[in-house]
Amino acid sequence: MNRKTGVILSYVLMAFEVFSTLILTPFIIRSLGQAEYGVYKLALSLNAYLYLLDLGVGNTAIAYISKYRANGDKLSERKFIGISTLFYAVISVLTLVAGLLLTKALPEIFGAGLSGEEVKLAQELLKITVLGTAFVLLTAVYNNALIAYERFFISRSLSILQILLKIIFVFLALKNGSGALGIVKVNFILTLIFRGAATVYAVMRIKIIPKFSGINTGFVKETVKYSSFILFQMIATQINLTADQVLIGATVASSAVIIGVYGVAAQLSQYFQSIGQVFSGVLMPGVVRLVERNGSADEICNEMIKIGRIVLTVCGMVLAVFSVFGKRFINLWAGSANTGAYYVCLLLMTAYLLIMTENVGMQVLYAKNSHKEISVIKLLIVVLNLFVTLLLIKWNPLIGAALGTFIALMLGDVVLTNAVFVKKLKISLMKYWLGVTKGTGICLVFTIVSGFVFSMLTPENWLGLISGCMLTSLTYLTLIWLIGFNEYEKDLLKRVFRQKKKKS
Image (cartoon, one colour):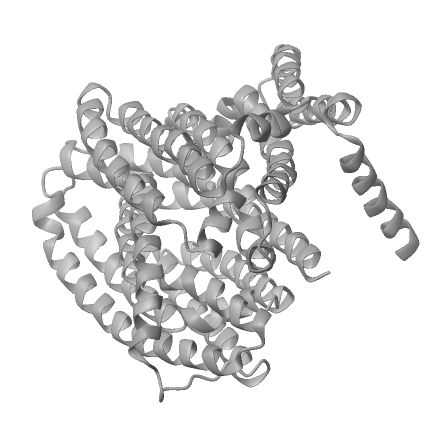
């Protein structure tokens, strides 16, 4: 029940995040202008690198707390909370120091791509976002404990309320003429309030109380060993997400506008990712239990297929509709100056779709503590990403940057990751991919074809966009029910509707 509630609330949270983006982004772009918006997105991209100081302990916390909870080992849990609390206290200080150094280095790094005023603005934005990041890291273990204890209602509800307040106060700040500085100040204050509330709840209600004595060296070494390879994956993921905007800003003259366009694409792509990634945190405790009872390779493969089909069904529909109507949507929503974001989105979303369908396999690797090879591989692939992206930026700053990231994601997160699944999890890739795509692949092809027909029949305005998207989605849903879903999935959906009917 907790897992089902977690998935539902995670999708509700995702819906609110998407809603806030749809409402705020065009207002922010028009209020700030394309160049200031680009500087704002660049500052956020730079700040995101400071989260790497987490060193992988965030994901480790969920896995270890879930494990200790499953085994009823409260003492080890408290020791882990204790060492994590000390670790994050040190890391939050290092974050402030690193942020200060990065702020001072901005003129040297981006002097060629940004004007003097744009660099100064980026420095002010970065100072405030760094403070928020330090507080997020300081409270990270307690926030992760809510996920490990499957307190999804509290965790997601706080996040939803924070988003609603963000919409209101950002709107007021921009109306007041506060600009990008007003946006980051609002985010900082709300972060203090809601992360603080989550920490208080974890300590007071579910008794996540650290124990600072009796922590043996072996325990620390085990934790560090587990976390270090997650760190490699975090570095790879973060670079793939933000390196393009940083490289554009550092190497392309008058790059603020281009960064703004890429920022629109990156934001849409990240929300696309969130559609599939909501399963990760929610499913992690259940995956840990599967591993703890020594689930067989067939059981693991079947679990991957089951979740992968759900992710492909939902995310595949979004990508199919976007591939047809995405350019029209971006022109109407963010303005024709951001049309190039459509092509960036297509490249990134296509790679993310394949990655997300097999994300549960990554959770199994974490739970089995078998993620060493894949972490190293991903880090090496990032080097290739930077090299290829730098070359392609010279050809075309916007599309070249996205293409470099696409190549890296396909090699690292799809091809080589699948090889690790075969080696470590002993699963059959043919069984997995045939199981995931059976029925769904043909539905996606027919949906895209029908979508292009609908696009020619609908006008180039919001009414035409909405009607075209609805007709294409309805086509997909009809096809997926008739030829895509298997009997288990149909029965599952019927049970959901029966439960809703009984409640009503």
